[in-house]
Structures are given as structure tokens and as C-alpha cells.
Amino acid sequence: MADAAPSQDSSSEHAGTRRDFLVLAAGAMGGMAVVGITWPLIETMNPSADVLALASTEVDISQIEEGQVIVVKWRGRPVFIRHRTADEIASAQDVSLDDLSDPQPDAERAPRPQWLIVEGVCTHLGCVPLGSKIGDPRGEFGGWFCPCHGSHYDTSGRIRKGPAPANLPVPTYEFLDDTLVRIG
Amino acid sequence: MTTPVPQNRVAQWIEYRLPIFSWTNKHLVDYPAPRNLNYWWNFGSLAGFMLVLQIVTGVVLAMHYTPHADHAFDSVEHIMRDVEWGWLMRYLHANGASMFFAVVYIHLFRGLYYGSYKSPREILWWMGVIILLLMMASAFMGYVLPWGQMSFWAATVITNMTSAIPWIGETVVTWLWGGFSVDHPTLVRFYALHYLLPFVLFGVVFIHLWALHHRKSNNPLGIDIKSPKDTIPFHPYYTVKDMFGLGVMMFILLIFTFYMPNVLGEVINYEKANPLQTPAHIVPEWYFLPFYAILRAIPDKLGGVVAMVASIAILFILPWLDSSRVRSARFRPIYKWAFWIFVVDCIALGWVGANTPEGNFIWIGQVTTGYYFAHFLIVLPLIAKFERPTPLPESIHQAVLKGGGGGEDAPAAAAEAAPADAAAAEKT
Image 1 (cartoon, rainbow over the protein chains, first blue to last red):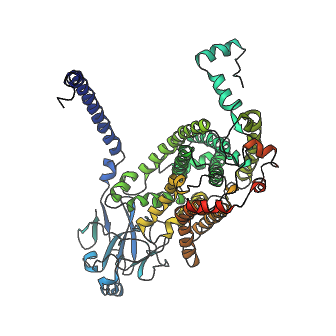
Image 2: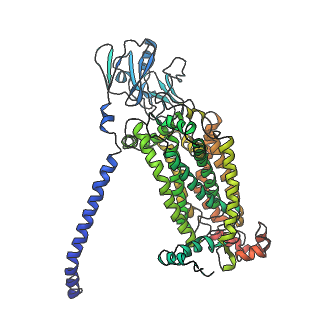
Image 3: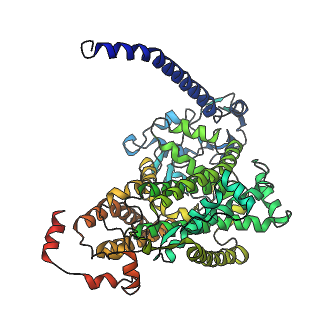
């Protein structure tokens, strides 16, 4: 470097250093300012505190008869609470995990076998599957059937057929006593 | 073509400070347009008119609409029943969206047929694709605003597509919603964006026209303007022609607006949004049906979303997929067929999209989706390689004035089937 053109180099280097420093420093500050404001701008679109505050709900399940499903609203979306019959429990438990595209044993999804609690939102594109009301189609596996794009769920809310990639998610919930459950 | 100096002294005073008179003259009056533009060239200005109509009716509607999950549905009914002429504004706006898409789709296929995407108009073409994307986003978000059942579930299904993105999908979809489902925060942001995007679109239209006026319009022959004899002034020739087209388009739009304002909509959207009940049959508006069919053709969540995005994104690289240097399909005997097959394929996709994915619609959807991409990725490159175009006319004015009006047969008269040409074509 030094033996190429010493006189030119040193003068331009000297003149350049301060200016380069200022350009870089100002550019860096400007860049930080842009990032600094972009982050809050993006964050404003995330759920606000009041939306997050509504994140749990308590449900009385004493009135749900065997074989019945109720739909409750949690975080603005439906949750299915299903009082399963002995047959439904048996058919959910007898499935080999190899037959499932999203393998999960029924015992893991329903710690109290007569109660199945799942989010009622199809994992494909978010429609509410049918099967909770009497007379609804329940699909080929007796659980739920999504009318939008034809996904079939079994009595454990697991995906068995259709485009949905995953089982109906089990929300975090807790039995406060035998008749009261808190979701969220 | 001398720039007229304004005679009026006030106009002179303005012109000296802001050259608006010479600018208008340059771009709207004496602007040299190819003398052979046919009626397919009306659709650009028609699209521009539709954009303005949508903005004007939209601003008026915004004065009466309430962007709130509890009040939006009722405020739309308030517009329909109580607001003076509110029904007219809303029906014009809703049917105007369909008209806008119709003319833009025709405009797009015009570009495909006559090779308007080819050099030197690639950036012009890109701006058009961006305009299409902005239109789709605006139309989708506008459809959500009445907060009916179809509004709500369209919003749910479309926003859920982002949840297909690996790893960050769920975070992104929560961010889009501003909550854990489509709800009030989603509605308000859609309203803000639905108001904003048309103005962004207007800006992109400006760039679209900037590029257009820099390289000038393509024309049915697809050959360059070579001399002033190839052009005629925009005014009065094309202003009059565009006005006539505008009359025809408004006639169609008003037939829909006055006599069948809901025929393109879904009845179930007059039912208020219910987050706990999905309608039995979800269908998008007609202008999204082909893309909806592509989404459903792939039996995999991520794959379907990727294919749908790719179906539009592929237009960006079209100028390089079709490397034939001849623009107009008039001189491309094989491409002409490929074009019409592609049109039929797109219509078939729309038909599949309108039906439940059962029985035959499953394989028809998959075949038509496959062909959609094959058209761009296989058919066009192969045609560009092996097709032997018929000879191009010398110039626009020669073809128009001497060649019998530049019809389909005109160039064929000059065609000479030399074996050397065929050999050359195979090499390239």
C-alpha cells in the first residue's frame, strides 16, 4: 500500500478519515434510528394488553351429558368440550399410533378419558369443524369434520384424513374441581 | 408537434412556474401513440378509471362506515337504508371491484397475447404485477369490512395461510390478527390498510405510466415505433376511442349495479360474523377463484400456499421464460395456440375453484394447476426455442396502410419457407 503512491495516499487518507468517520457514524445512527422506530411500529400490531388479559375462561361442565359436546369461546375462538361415551373413548384409545399422521396417544390428549377438551379450530386454515351439534356430520372417524377443505378428526380430535397437518390442539386447562374447568 | 405556448397570460404565468400545460400536452394531447392500437388497448385507461371510481366511492363510504367489530355490520346496513344514496355508493363500490378486476385481467391477457412484457417493457410489466398484488390485498381487506359471515371466514382462511410458514407461522398470524383470532383489532387494521393501499396503488400506477411513456405503448404488431408515420396523437384519436370504451364499460357496470347488485356476492355475507360457526361452503369472490383452486389442488398446507403465491410471482420472471424475440402472437403460430389453451386453463381453474373439492374436481384441479405452471416453465421456453415466427412487417405504417389493415393474413403474404431458416431456428 505505502509504496504504491505514498504522497497521494497519505493526503487522501488524511482527508478521508474524518469525513468517512462522520459519514459512517451518521449512517450508523440513522440506521439505528430506523431500526429503533421500526420495531415499535411492528410491535403495535401484536395483541394488546387487554386482549392478552382475556386469555383464560372458566366453564361449568356439570350439565354436559355423556355424548354431548359444548362449544365455549376462549380467546375469541371456539373450544370443544366433549363428554365422551365409553365407545368413543375405546375407539380413540384403540388406534395404533402408526395410523396417525400426527401421532399422539389419547391418554396424553385426555388425561381424564371421559373429558376431551380441544380447540375447535381446524389446523388447516382455521375453520370451525362440524360435529359438535346433534345432526352434524362427524366425518369418517366419528369426531369432527371440517367443511371447508374436508379434514376428518377422530374422537380424540386427531387428524385422520384431509389436508390439515396437525391434530386439534389441546389448550392448557385445569380441573378446579369435578365440575369446573379453567381453560388457559 | 410544437409545444403550444399558452396564449392566456394567467396560463403563461403558471406555465413559467409549473409547466403543467406543456406536460399535459406532451402526455395526453400530442403524445405519439402507435396508429394501429386495437380495442384491447382500451383496458389500461379503463382500469385507471375504475381505480378513481373506487377511491371516490370508497372515501364517501368511509364517512358513514364504523370500523368496529360490534358496529361494522350495522353501519353497512345503515349505509344501505338510511344514508342518502348510500345504496348506490355501496353497490357501485362492490360491483366496481369486480369490474376493476375484469378489466385488469383483460389488460393482463392483452399483455400476454401481444408480448407487452418483453424488452424494453419488463419494469413496466413488473409494476403491473405489483398493481395486481396490491389490488388483491385491497379487495380482500375491503371484503372483510362489512363483517358478515363470509367476510369473517374469508379473513380467517386467508390469514391462516401465513401460519403455514415453518417455525414463525403462528407468531406471524397472531401478529396479523392482533389477537388469537380474527377479531376487532383485525378489522380495524384491515380498514386502515384498505384505505391506504389504493393510494399506494395509485403511486405504482404512476410509475407504470412513467415507464410506459418512456418506451411508448406496444401494439398489435409488436414491432417498434420507427418513425412519426407509425404514430398518431393521443388526442383526439385515443381519447375518443377510450371514451367510447368507457361508455361500454359503464353500461355493463351499471347493469350490475342497478339490476343485479348482489349477483356476484354471497348471500351469507348478509348474516353477521359468527366466530363459532363456519358456513358450510366457503367461496371467495369470482376474481380469486383460479388462485383458490391452485391452493386446494396441492394436498399439503404449506405446498398449497406456496403454489398459490408462486402462481402470481411467476409473472415476474415471465419476460425471461419466454425468450422469443417476437412480441406479438400474430407472428407466433404455436404460441398463439398456447395462449388460448392457457386462457381455457385459467377459466377451468376458476370453475374448479367455485366447486367443492370432491370427485372429479380434485383431479381436474390438479391437472389444470399442473398445466398452469407447465405453461410458464415448460411450454413457453420450448416454444421460444423451436417455434419459427412468420416474418414481421417492415413498419407499423406499412402494415397498416398497405398491408390490408394489418390483419392476420397481411404478413403471411411475405412468408417464404426457406429450409435454411428452419435450420437456423433449430440452432438457436
